[in-house]
Length: 317
Image 1 (spheres, rainbow, N blue to C red):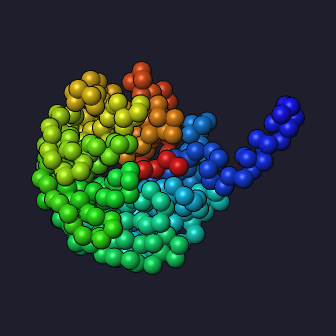
Image 2: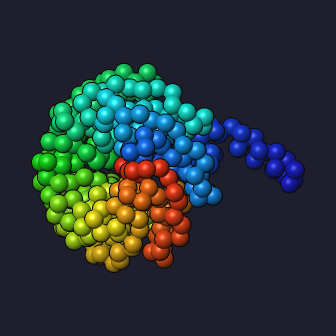
Image 3: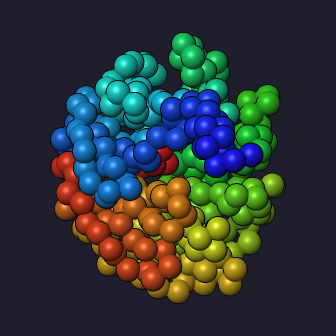
């Protein structure tokens, strides 16, 4: 095949992919005080838009199969659906109570919403947003994550100091395990082997075997750890410490803390760039996002967002 024919073939292949698979990656930052969502072009590290989202937006979830971004609104009775291509609100879904944690499954077919007051997780399908199931969990459910094989949903029950494991085939509770004090953010590795929990009141991270929630160890971090994200092929775990204005870095092989990085004031949400090398941190009090180089462990950029940036969840598309 000559060069011209090869170029034509590659062009046809590229055009055959859905737009969201080749689109510019964006970060969606919920600004709770301002009632907005800032959109960051993370190739240019530049804020390019701001969308009004009423109801004190907190949680963020990305649908991996279409252009939807879901924003939980604890004072708005549910969650808001944003179209990432048009950067516009296209729907509001009522849940009731106080929606906080939110996550989408890996097939893009279901979105899960944790209700802080009702102690439940509501399950919606993502075509018409019909309610499928309401699952009772522990007290004050917050962070959630889903296993890579789409089999298990993990829920941090903050006031119960526990994590629940839910079977996504039956929506039945399989296991509940105690961890540190007031677990909030969760993360699971790509192999679905280790689950990590940021425990706000005990200032540590619990490490569990994800299959049966067997407790492996706890690792001391900074003050009031809130949310966590993995990077560098799961070799490093990054933990936001609300009261230290820092991010702790854990080596996941040795399960030891190796660094503490200063960021903005009261860091909360954290998520990793698709390149797996840059970590984005939402800072509540400074209303900024810090960009960390996961290899050098330095802040390489600080972006101004909106007032009260939280971005709790997976906020990068």
